[in-house]
Amino acid sequence: MVKPSDRLDKVCTRPPVPPPERTAAKCALCMKPLAKENMVTKDGKSFCCTAAADQFFASDAQYQEYMSRSKGGGFGRFLKKVIVLLVLLALGAAAYFYFFGEGKDGLSVDEMKKKAAEAMDSVKQ
Ligand SMILES: [Zn+2]
Image (cartoon, rainbow, N blue to C red; front, side):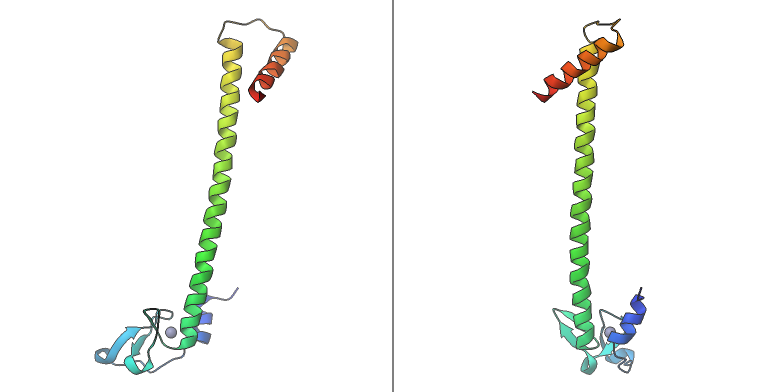
């Protein structure tokens, strides 16, 4: 695993740090202060070199892709869980009202199983 700081050292050149009154911007990638003559601008952002700009937008695109992928997958899994939970709740409620809602009690295990099978069939229809 490459640490971000290692990548920055490879990409960002080290232009001379300008005195505060000549600092025009900061590199959006490495955050070093830049003088106007050392500054590279791309899509409204300032960088210390074109390689830094490329690196910034490449990693930004990767980050956006990663976010959309993980967000979509996470939401899909969450939705599936909710649907399964709702189906289970509906089945449970249906079974509860079917067996106990009309005062039916004293059923044997075999009768319960038969009623459960009937309930499942009626839910499927
Ligand atoms: Zn930089």
